[in-house]
Image (cartoon, rainbow, N blue to C red; front, side, top):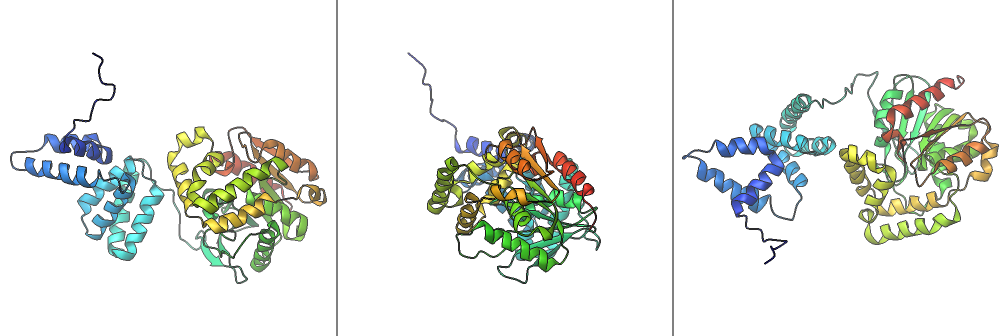
Length: 410
C-alpha cells in the first residue's frame, strides 16, 4: 500500500490558531506565552488561540499584513499601548513596510487624536532603533525643511522644494511620483536647491482627460520652470522624466544649463508598439493591478527585489495607487516619444545614464542618445535595470554630483 502523498490536514482549531499566532507574533513570544500558561489562565489562552487567532486571523477576507495594520490602528485608538508595542514590534520584524506603518499612524492621528499618534510614533521609533532600523534624520529646521506647493498655472502640478544653491529639477518615471527621488533629493539639497514635481496624472497633480502627448508633458515642465523663476536649471529625469528632459533640451534649451537623462529612450523601435498597445489595453480592462507586477519586475531586477522585498512591495503599492486613466494617458505620450532625429541640435552639457540590466531602456538606446548630443557622456551601471537611482543609489548620486559640479555657474 502506498502512502497518501497529500494526507488530510488533521490540525484542530487550536493548532491552526497557534500557526497563525506564530506567523504574526513570532515563535519566541508564542512559546513563552503557551509555556507560561497556568491552571488559572490556560482556558483563556486556548480561547483566544482558537477564536481570535484561528477564526479571525485565519479568515481569507484580509491578508495578514492588512490585519496587522488594523490592529495597530485599533490599539492606538484605545490606548492599549502594551498590545500596540507587541504588534508593532512583530509587524516590523515580520517585514511589514515601515512606510505602511507610518501611514497607519498618520491616519490614526486624524481618527484617534494627536496625543495617541504622538505616543504611537514614540513607541514605534523606539522599536525601530532597538531593531537597528533607526530612521534617517529629516530636520524640519528652516534651512532643511521640504516645502510643498502647487503651480498657479493649470493643470496644477504638486511641487516640493528643499536645500540651498544652484537650481536642480528632478522628474520621475511613469506610474510613480516625486517620492521616487526622496533619497537623492535629500543628498543633493546639501549643495543645491532641489525642486521635484508630480507629472500630470501622477501623485497629487491634476489629472486632465487624456490621451496626453509628449509635448504636453514638456510644456508642463517648461511652465513649471518659468513659474519657479530659477532658470536655467539642471534637469535630472529618469525614464519618462528623461524623455521630458530631451524635449526641454530640444524645444526650450534656454531653460536648462545641463541635463541628466537616465534610463530613458528617444524613440522606440516599431516592434515595441504592440507591447505598449497591450499594456494600455490591459490597464483599460483590469486597472493598475493588471500590470503592477510586470512593471515592478521591469523597474527592479530580480536580485534587487530578493534583497529588498520591502522596496519592491512599496513600489507595487505606489503603482496600484496610480489613477488608471491618467496612467493610460501618459502611456500614449511615452509610447510615441520621438526626439532622436532632433537631438543633434542640443548644445547642453549632458550626462546619459543606463542600466546594463535594463530591458526597456537598453544601453544601446542610451548610446543612441549620447551619440547624437555633442559632448554627451554615457555612464552604464552594471548592476542596475530601470530604476537605477534606487538600485545603485550611491553610484547614481556620485555620477550626478560630479556632473552638477562640472556645470559652469549661471
